[in-house]
Length: 265
Length: 269
Image (cartoon, helix red, strand yellow):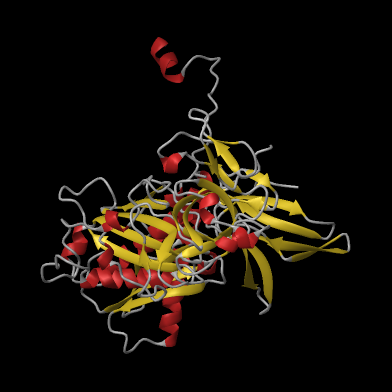
């Protein structure tokens, strides 16, 4: 069930419940919508689902009495009914993400979240543009082609905490995979260096929003783990999985240990 | 005889089917406002900066404003469960800022820039659904590229409020372009209430009589909630009925601008 009426932010879509053929139909706010309490002439307030972005309305039937309302911006595809991108991809719990391993310690792995499965990159410029604080340092002498600003002069706001600073050039959201979240079996015998190496691209799931800096991730599922890796700590060639825990560099024949994402697809 | 035929055309002439001229938006504005002057036409364009998550450009007379929005992007430091917002309004270096007696300081923001930024921030804060963006920051950057000449010379407050009005509108469009979730589009109205109860729109410069300048920003589809009020002028004798007149007139103007924004958005999706 869908329609393609275009709505602007704030526009009313439907009340949260309606009577149809003497049956109550409930509408639930999905992506790109929120509930607004709208006053009518008689001092009554009616809960109405209103749009929060510019896009087209799509209705999804949950069952006979419940319908979910989503607003989908132009250019976004509907891959699954419950999993619609609304243009902005902030990582959230239960999202499957691709991460790059930056640093490993005995207890945990530090990584950077590159993209969210089915939704694309998190940062608009994939982290290569100058959206970070470095780009803000000053307006270049000639004026420059960019819309640059000095970060020190930003009228810092009622909502921003003083100890929060923006990341540098192209930095992404960070994540941590703790030792106990790598595998679901044999947790006490896991050695991190036999599972991941810095530079690996890993498929992982977000288990918590974590602290101010890091998300907490897990790879303890068959379909999660290393997807791309290079041998000899990145100096070698691309390797291919040969089973659940080994990868082979087919040019040199070198075999290295990794926690592979399901290689048997 | 032949001359007359040339003027009236041949006998079997068929009139081409020319549709009636549809009155454009500007004309509508003039009809809708019962004030002495109406809103000049303005030009908007969104998505002009590739690098930014959202951007918009607005021209009205000689006033040119550009807004870019970055984020939501990661933030360092302690955990915050809702997005944080920062706003910066900046005049480009070559512009003489309105109501500025001294040279603008080379570092940091000038007094005027601070006032513009904080008004914009107080308008935007209740509008964005910040709880949808934990651990991240949204930066709004406003460049004022050009302003009207009359604004520079004028000692009146209305020019500043006029500029602020269009900054708010340009920012709204940029916010929509960035796809950040907002409760409603913010639009605003700016009027001048003279002592004898007349309402004026725009920045005409007849500063003979004492008057009150008002800028009020609304979320028109959210029960006309007011998100920002800026009054200038002597308000000591402002009565309740005058205040409600100001609010009503600003609301009217705001709705006209909102209607224009809506049609722009729907036609340009």
